[in-house]
Length: 330
Image (tube, rainbow, N blue to C red; front, side):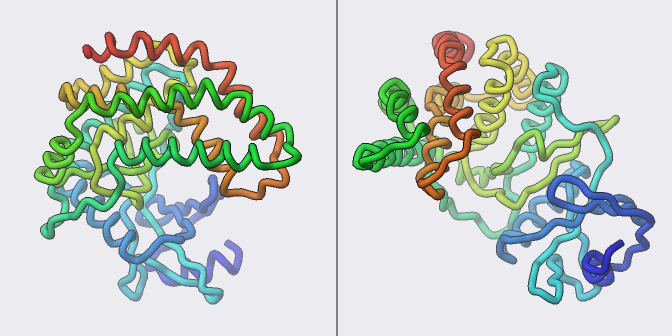
């Protein structure tokens, strides 16, 4: 173990047998089991909330979560001499998720449903809803798309990425505008009132990197972005990624939904929200947002490739969206 790691690990009552590097972190095999060390750039309040959620899950019988390890000072967060902050968390050895395997897809959506059933009334003090509603998010994203287009149009010289983006903008913005026009389908206020009554919260970052497939179940990690929100937003996030990885194959969508609804059937209104969110060209907005908030004088070939892939999947996605109302029973 190098000196930088030793400086941090000396704050913990653990006997380390070996250490190995993983994506953006270090895993330690210790006398108390596996632990993972990650740099922590969020607030103390985020750590406290994440730990409350994880402990709540453990108390409810869902034990495979990355609870924090307290250091010798009784703190969740440990600073090194340079002021860099770290957390040490329980870790698991298992299989990574593969979103091209139908069995894996069903397992991770079933796991999400099980989490959602437990992620209610986590704290004694009532939580206050502070995030955007899905309606506000869609309206804001469409406004941001128009702003990016206006910025590019004003440029006297445009690079390859900007020219490609502007050529694709009309058809993708038409989709975005159509999705915004669908917002009246749902009584948004009623849904959010129900959410607050149930004190329901989302994982906030539920993706295949944060699920480990074990022999006897699943482990879920990275709860630092938990917040009060419609729980179908978690489902939307993972469904969109699953569909992107599987060329918008409706059979894959059906398997994913079957996994989730085996444990937590969606209401008719939640299904409508899923329909509206899936109609949004989210990937196009993400690419635009990354461009607008980065150095615009140079764009990597990777971003051009992302636009090309988006255009390549466009027809498959539109065919999927045509079938989606029937698949959701709307």
